[in-house]
Amino acid sequence: MTDQKKLRLLLFEECTRNCPGCCNRDWDLQSLPVCRDHSPYQLIMLTGGEPMLHPEIIQAAVADIRSQTNAPIYLYTAQPAELDALMPLLDGVTVTLHAPENIPVFEAFDRTARNLAGKSLRLNVFEEAGTLTCRPEWKVKDHMEWIPNCPLPEGEVLMWYQPLEHSCMLWRDTR
Image (cartoon, rainbow, N blue to C red):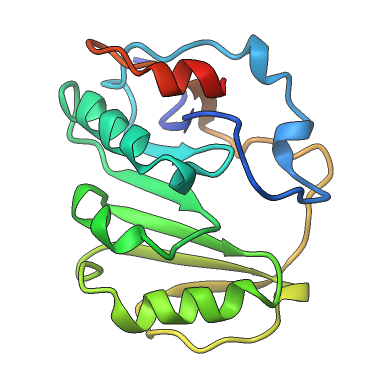
C-alpha cells in the first residue's frame, strides 16, 4: 500500500480560464506518472484543466475507478452549470469560484440541483468573486488566495488518468 492516501487524478490539461495562479503552471505535468491502479487510495479527486469541458471523460474515469475500488470520488470544477447530471456518479464536489461572473452560475446550479443529498459539498470562493447565497450543506471556504508553487497537501499524489480498457481519443487529443 502506498503512503499516499489521496489521489488527484488529472483528466486533461484543457481549460478555458487563464487563472493567474493556476497550479498547473507550477508543475511539470508531462512528467507525471499515469495511474493504472486506483485501489490503494482512500479518496480520489478528479481534476484538470477544467473537467466539466468533457463530462464524458469524467464518466469514463468514474467507471474505470469503480471497476477497481469503491473509494469516494470527488470532482474539482469551476463550472457547475451542467454538474447535476453527474452528481449521482460522484461522492462529492468542490466548486471554485474565481470571479464575479461565476456567482450567478453557481447560484443557479445550487437552486436547481436535485442530486446533492448525502454528498460532500465544498465551495472555494476567491476574494475577487464576491459574496453569494447557497444551501447550508455547502462547506464554504471564502477569501481564497492563490498559493505560490502550489504544493500538494501531505498524503496526496498527482497522476494522470488514462482509460483502463477502452479507447478515448478525446483524452489523447487534449493531453
